[in-house]
Image (tube, rainbow, N blue to C red; front, side, top):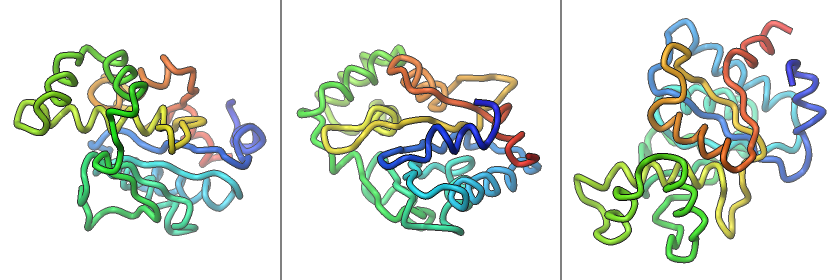
Length: 198
């Protein structure tokens, strides 16, 4: 899928969910490109729902572009209620607090399976929030963005802004691994930067 036309033909279908996310640290020269591709995606498609994690940086810039065209197509998954509320551009927000993790064993499984975090996830499930387990909420949120829940469909494709000098690290890396292990294709800016020039 090298061209934007191929992307449209493949993914602009009812039920499609495209994950837009990436690094919090976005190069100043790239910030406008993330917003522009968000606008391009929303303007050029009819059916896709765009999903974000409401983080600063890439998530925000992608979302900003989408909402400038059609805010009703932005869905946000947050690690807790009120997360970055002033910056949440989502039309529809689902918090991890709204998800009964006891009834979502696949979310737990895929979070443990995508990173070496089993102990952290187990501690969070047993003890809840504390200074040690707070990171678990973000990892679980990232997994939900990819695999969905019993009430939330999985992503169809993910579009990332990654750190190409240190790729697949941090939360973005966890989300990429969740995509890989669940057969969800993804691309990064080495592909979508070209869309802005076509």
